[in-house]
Image 1 (cartoon, rainbow, N blue to C red):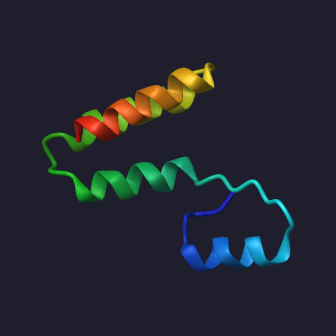
Image 2 (tube, rainbow, N blue to C red):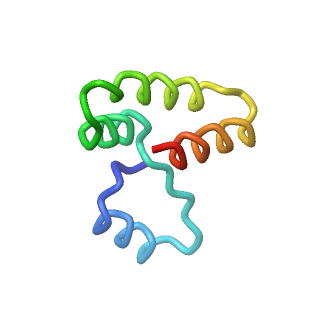
Length: 71
């Protein structure tokens, strides 16, 4: 799991054959919140957390994609 830095991802890809890279969910939520107006940031963060806690990966992905489209 990495924090999303492009150089870090490039280094992991250069060293390992088929790495599975996962973004840190906390950093992702913080980065998204930082780019949103303060009026909607808490609501978006709450929806992201709910999707990350969904045991159904396909439903979680669909929820996050719908949220991204709505923004």
